[in-house]
Structure formats: structure tokens, C-alpha cells
Image (cartoon, rainbow, N blue to C red; front, side, top):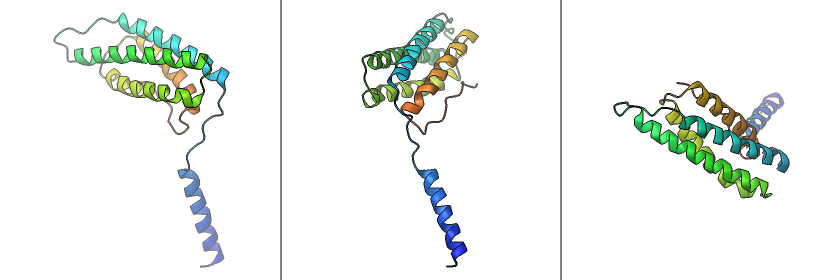
Length: 154
């Protein structure tokens, strides 16, 4: 193999390896993560309060089942955020709080699926946006390769 071709193959191989290598987590900053946890607890509580004020769909509405499922998911998200926040306030580290974060993100994904079909007011959407923003700030500490969460589109 000619030296120029060999060099090109090596460069392409290194680039492919670098692209496939897992991204590194953000350096753990207990104070910052704890503050984000507190903000998340507050934001999810506000989201819950806002969603509770939404009128329930009528019995004939095709959104009814999804509405109640979304309500349960927001309630669960609020509990998980509170649990994560309190663990961080006790000084628990990334390894100790990661299962709580992962559980919360599963709930977020399920809630986003239901939120796509359930009508909600601007207040609920704005509060959900605040929650997503805080989660996007927390994510690099737990999952470096996760894409940022975008607002739900209908």
C-alpha cells in the first residue's frame, strides 16, 4: 500500500473510532447539580399544579384516556424530581443518583408521547418547557450522549 493511501486509511479509521467513542460525562459539580435538582423539584411541582387546573376531557373525547395517563406521568415526574433533589441535597453522588435520573427520564419520554395528543393550555406548555430546560442542564452529568430535549410538537 502506498504511504499516502495508508495515511488516509489511518486518518479515516481514527476519525471513525473517535466518532464511535462514547462522550464523556461533565465533571461532577455537587453544588451545581444540587441546585439544578432543587430547581427541577420546584418546576415539576409548578407543572403539576398547572396541569391539575386543566379541564378534564369529556367522556366522549378520544383524548380522555391519554389525559389521565399524562396526569399520572406528571405526578410521577414530580415525585421522582423530589426524590432526586433530596438525594442530591444529602450529598449523594452521580452513581447514587443515576438510577433516579434514569427512571425520571423514562417517565419524561412516556409523558412526551402522551403530551403530543393531549390538548393543554399555554401555562402547562410553558411550565413543561422550564422542566425540559432544567433536564437539559442536568443531562450532561448523567448521559453525555443524550440529545437535548426539545419542546413537544403536535
